[in-house]
Image (cartoon, rainbow, N blue to C red; front, top):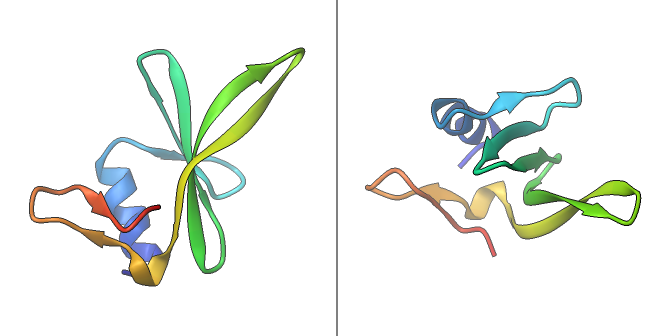
Length: 78
């Protein structure tokens, strides 16, 4: 999978690109993002820690290892 293919899939799932090139979405009151990097992506959730927000990694993977399953889910993140 290429980065562009992943970005198209994310847009189709309702994620919005921010000024830094990452894709955000709010689900059940929680903020999630795909942090787009040169060769890989990180799936993260925002968490309030003491007096500031941090992004915590849930899963990550290289674009070359990612794929879309027949039921339109993303596979290959670990």
